[in-house]
Amino acid sequence: DKMTLSFEEIKDILGFEIDHSFLNYKKELLELGFECKKISLKEKAIIFERRKEI
Image (cartoon, rainbow, N blue to C red; front, side, top):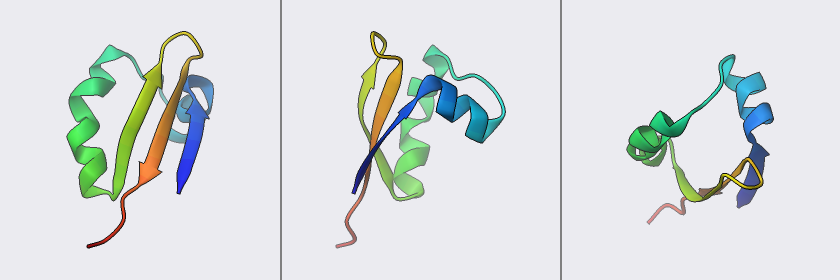
């Protein structure tokens, strides 16, 4: 399952804006079962993918 969220949508969910430091927390996403597939600064969006359980 993939989903694309804009920076604005992420801000609405988290309650704060993300910035370049978000890249430092990509490992935490793995613990939550998601992978950051692509960060588009041009489109101001991030594509997340749910990891499949092995």
